[in-house]
Image (cartoon, rainbow, N blue to C red; front, side, top):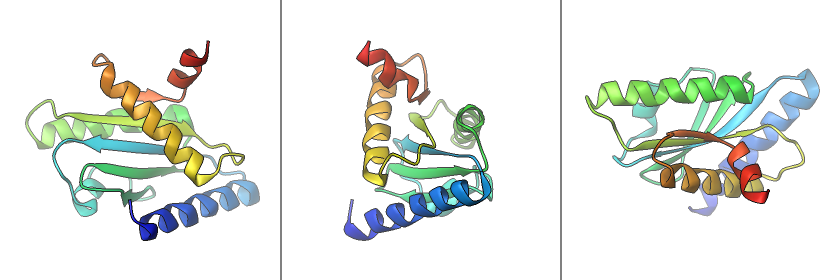
Length: 140
């Protein structure tokens, strides 16, 4: 991931935090992994217009679910996977990690947590969307 992408994520997360503090608006963060390369334009067809996407590389994408709780972001993630499966006419290798809004987390911490969650989701083939709860289970 290059410095420009890191800067974009940092700026986007800070905007989300400002909006949350100023207007008490919910949001959730996600990391999408898709085995087949997608452009941001292609991926944007499958997400809401209010959500934001930044490509980290050819197969990973940082998503901000604006105006959305973690619970609703989970459902939106399931919908994205379903739409991608339909688009590719197959069960695509796609996983999404979801992390809730917490203004005490730095943008780097959010990315690190999402990468941990996506790794665990890919190891557990029974679920394609995983939340931060999986990290809590590891700490017990």
